[in-house]
Amino acid sequence: MKRLLLLVAALLSMGSTSPASAAERSEISLNQLREMFADMRTRPGYAKWNVDGELLWGYFFTDPEPKKLRPVAEQLSQRGYQVVSIHQAEDKSTFFLHVERIEHHTPESLHQRNQEFYKLARQFGLQSYDGMDVGPVAR
Image 1 (tube, helix red, strand yellow):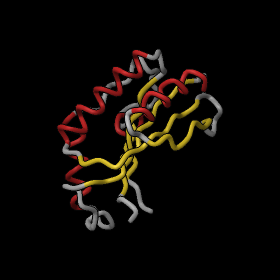
Image 2: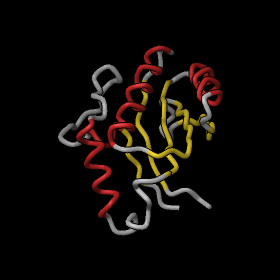
Image 3: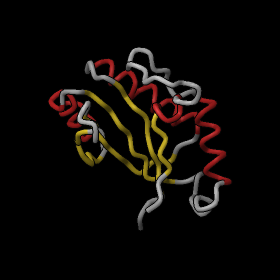
Image 4: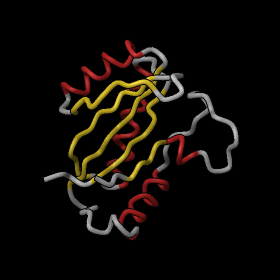
């Protein structure tokens, strides 16, 4: 299944040659989300997606301590998100919490969701809310 991966690190790496710490990272902007939606509507291979309907949205949180991700996973599970995994990055520097849910988003609603998740990451003292990916709903 094709998925469009849009992690904040990838979005913001343009023009940056060194990795930013969580505190230095910028948040995904509404303009970036508008560009992402426009891209999904025009990019070959994604044109069959119903961008104006439900898609499978994945969200990612990071921290070097996997135990800090577990309460976030539990809270999001209670809010209707499916916990996909807590897994270690290839370079073993951090762990990722991956959750997903079928949702309909506009750039504005996704921006609001991202703001909620940035706040959640700060509330739990995580390294970051790292962004999202999206794919078609498997039927």
